[in-house]
Image (cartoon, rainbow, N blue to C red; front, side, top):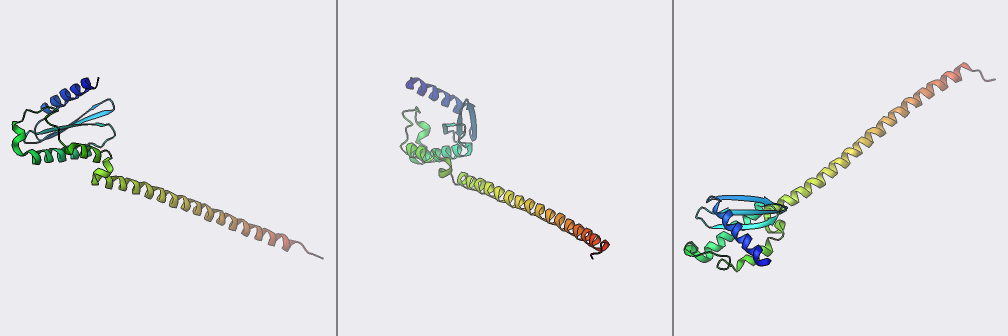
Length: 168
C-alpha cells in the first residue's frame, strides 16, 4: 500500500512540475491537502504536500531554500542527472522538514504575523473593556443626574409643603 502511495505521489509531482511554467509557483488543493509546486527559471522544480492549514507562503519559502541548497550542493550537474525519487534523496531535506513542521517558528514573517494577530486581539479586548467602562460611567453619570433632579424636586416639594402649613 505504501509503495502505491509513493508511486502516485511521484507521478503526481512529476506531472504537476511539468505543467508549471519556469519561474512560476502553483498550488492545488485536494480534500484536506495542498500540493505546492515551484519551478525555478532554470527549470529545477520542487513539490511539497501540506495540510490545508499550512501557510502557502511558508511552503514556498521551504521549496526556495531547498532548491537553492540543492543547486549549491550539486552545482550545475543536476541538469544532466536522470532524476528519480531515489536519486534525488537529499540529506539536508530531513532537517528542513523537521524545522518547517511549525511554520511560525521556521518563518520569521509568519511568527511576526502571529505575534501581530495576538497583539491585535489583546488590543481589541482592551478597547472593548475601556468602552464598556465608558458606557458604565455614562450610565452612572445619567443616574446621578436623575438622582440630582429628583432631590431638587423633593426639596422644592418639601419647601412648598412646609411653607403652607403653620405649626402651632
